[in-house]
Image (cartoon, rainbow, N blue to C red; front, top):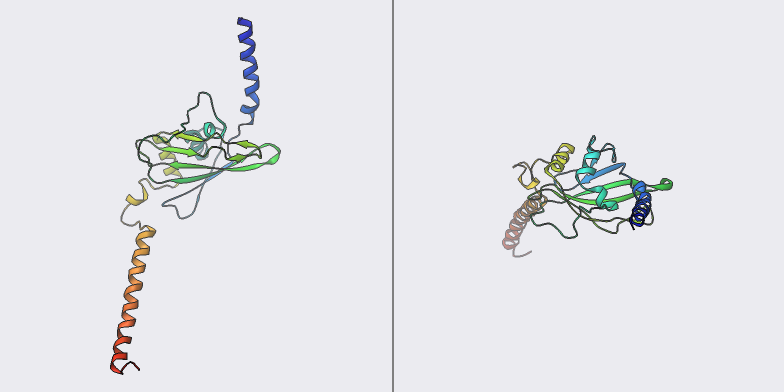
Length: 199
């Protein structure tokens, strides 16, 4: 009986090896979201640990368990309790077999409370036939610090200071100025028409 369990364990490990060997880290990543004028490039090695900005993002953001699955599984199927805050989009470029390069999207919530979170939609296709495991990942404050070093504001953009103007505020001001200008043009024109009897 004991020999049977040993053989079963060896067979299970052997079957798991191809999927583990196929697990590749991303070669690059770009970050976009509130407070970022242009997307930020996150440089470094995607599978060499936290020694580079990209490696830190991959490790701290739960890329590997979200992308390939892991046992035990640290991802969650439902959103953890708390406040999400602003959402940022990370687009990873992941090299695969036969020169294939796939793009996979991960959402990052660096200002979430009580701790930062990431989310990857399950079923994203990569390398032609593979599908992402997906799920929510509960990160640590180190993820936020890594993203701030990469170029994110230290505070949520809406609280980053009086110098920050949201697009909705700018749009409202522009509409009000346009209305004032229209009234300034129309009022004298109406008075002139009244003076000359509408001619």
